[in-house]
Figure 1 (cartoon, helix red, strand yellow):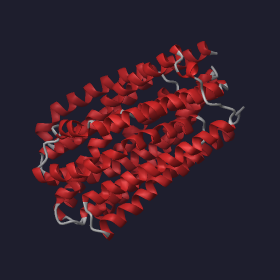
Figure 2 (tube, one colour):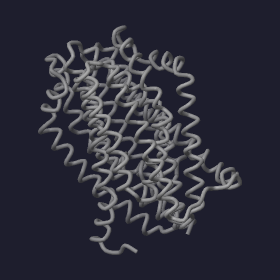
Figure 3 (cartoon, helix red, strand yellow):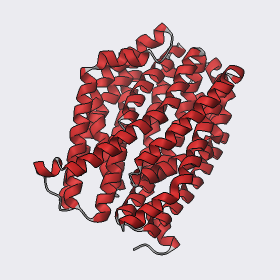
Figure 4 (cartoon, rainbow, N blue to C red):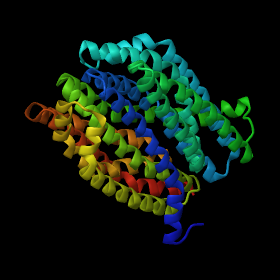
Length: 442
């Protein structure tokens, strides 16, 4: 049992540092994608990858319950010492991931048309984005299975193994990206092919490692009765449904950034795409502590330990704020260099610098939202999470409606900031309820 402050700090960082390293490699892919497209002669190439990636991010983040729900359920089963439940959770989630991925491939044409309708980009951008989509969609089953693997590893507090799988996916993606685009001159198609191949490799390795880990914990292949247990299935579907709705509410503002930016012209679209890469660097940095909060909070909640839940929440919040402050400083000092590294087009560079201050303040504005997301996901209190996201979305819409006409793209970034602050305030107000529920479980 962890008791001292030093032990808690050590425990938090023993879980967080592999996720920090793993997450560092994630935005590398987007940075390299944007950089190689930024060296092509037309901003439409950056815009096409931005739109194509936004389409997949929207769909995959909607299916993020495969990672988030799996983390919470497995962390609680791990805290309760139930190896049989762990095997059943993994098997159910992998089966659902495979079915959803196959459905995405089967319905790729209507799905693409429906999603591109949301983005009023130029004909050239839409054509290039469609090429990107037509290749990358074949990786859907693999990436969704990868979500499950990462969720299980986080729940089991095996962050080192998660690091191996994540680095494999992202470093392979970067290497193939540079090879296909710079070496072979494949353009947008090369970016998509690199991602496709990396996703399948990571899924194969990840599932193999997870099976070995579960066997080492004493888990055995679940039988039909365990997989179809009505109570467990009900809990899974309830958690999943709430997370799907919650993720839809979270994704709408991010989709709006791309959609509204596209309507403001290719230069603004490209500038926002460059700045969103910095935003994603922030997101993956803060996610490292959020994932740690998921694991520690879920473990404490599953064991019914109120004090341990409170302490885990406090220490992960402390380090989350420290990372957020460091990111603010890095963005303030090096944001211009990031922009110049990602594009050589003077008009895009100038526009991105104009909106850069919003990204500089974003880490401190968003840190509470990311951290509390992790706590609520780990404790599987997804109904509260869903409701708070809806109210925060209303704040975003109201702010955008009041500011877009007057301030243009600045109003768009102001609305994103208001969205993050509202998430923090709403989730923070409900936190005491989690501790009371932990007492009831104990």
